[in-house]
Image (tube, rainbow, N blue to C red; front, side):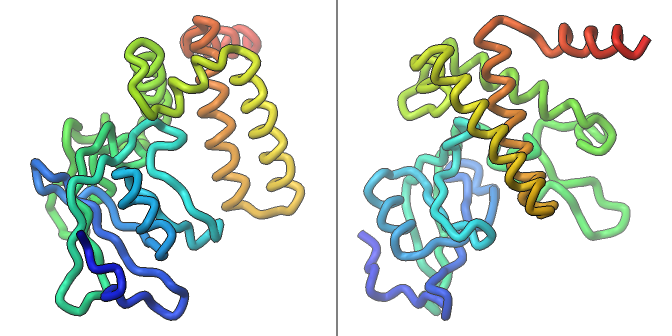
Length: 219
């Protein structure tokens, strides 16, 4: 068991946490933990972090279903950095890449990413790629219903629960936009789109059908 009293948190009560795939040893992401997030991670054996922007705790996978099952936690020689070895239940990066570190600053180097090929995986070149990947995740959660999956819980709750979340997220977008907070509006819009995709798939509606309707209106 990690010696909690040995951890040196910064002046804000935070410690950086490097997340590594326990099998491949690939570095997946870096986030921050406070004492509560670390305790919840130890109890649940799933990664919890602290958001410096929202100033609140968050569990990786709570929205996407891409949980990080924690196999072990190490701390470095200065006792001010954590290393989480995890079993990822999906892409760790919100872009759909396995790792958040999929781009290289070195010239003439290919981006460091897995299961991707050149521009086809560049979200700037294909902005709908992440939507298609999310649809695949949503469909798999509907079918497999893995324990602890947020999407599976919504599905089990039925249409009313799903649409309630859509309404809540829509309200959050309005509030963020009215406050003229660009970053918060982007964040809340992503939440709204995610829950809207869940509602569409619950009704068996595909993205292609929605795109076709938009195309029809444009014409």
